[in-house]
Image 1 (cartoon, helix red, strand yellow):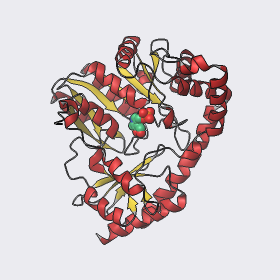
Image 2 (tube, rainbow, N blue to C red):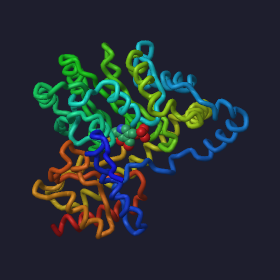
Image 3 (cartoon, rainbow, N blue to C red):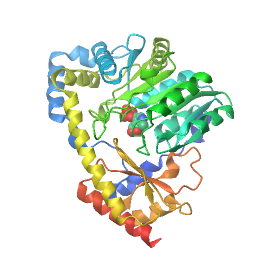
Length: 394
Ligand SMILES: Cc1ncc(COP(=O)(O)O)c(C=O)c1O
């Protein structure tokens, strides 16, 4: 049959990350390419006990259709956390439960973006969001970053030069893929620019709680006085990603429209994982569990940074993450990280080439993303050493 895919999806390419996973499946290969949280942080025993109890004692609640906005007690728990930990005004804002933070991005795009509208993104940015915007036929406009986050002067220039700018998408804290955290000053400036041009901000914050030193970075949502920030959060990195439980916090008019849009997508987020997240937080102290994850990632990140400093040749630079799961490495400009990734894969180590995270994926890019969350410290050191050998030879 002649399959004629829609314009929305015909230009979408399979993620390079999935391609790299083919190599990563080889047990001999050290993968610094993934982005998964460490499996040892999953509270599987606790969740297993709760699941058994729920299915035995609350089968209808667990297995019947639920309401689109999400399981009411979980919405309240999320609101309480957002108010307490992020200083987000949950009187003025509402929370709906979504199927992972990815769906919050998707629904926001669905309700605001018409074909040809521009979505402004940090460069580099999260591939899942970029592909989401592409699937709605948005124009993507990239804004460069430095170690303090998005370049605000460049942001304003980009807005001025864009056709129908609608949304600024940012991951201000422990960004994927760069590991960069936007300064408070820049967050305020970004908000003011969005206000000046009357744009929506998607603040995507799945890593905000994974600070190595416990430092808290005030969210843009916490300074949102006129309801333009759509805050996307997730239990993926603080509980377990396979649950597919995330949330959107925004002005009630926005969450109401997103709920209508969600009905044509998956009707509601699966009840059992919502109940698991809710019961887990009732019975256990999730903040204590997060504390342990932070310590684990801090140690792994320090191991990686130390190895990079030891084994990478001069001229290679890196970011200095203070939380999250990623380090961004930049080779001298003449090198193509995509081409080099093939040599590295033959040498049994893989990473994600930086072009994957750019608006123009076909343009040569000398940067790459490294992840430290799932490998042992020994493998991290060995992997970085192997990369260092390839880079040094070049
Ligand atoms: C920046 C960013 N946003 C959103 C997501 C989506 O996460 P989930 O849908 O699992 O909540 C991810 C996942 O890796 C991410 O890195």
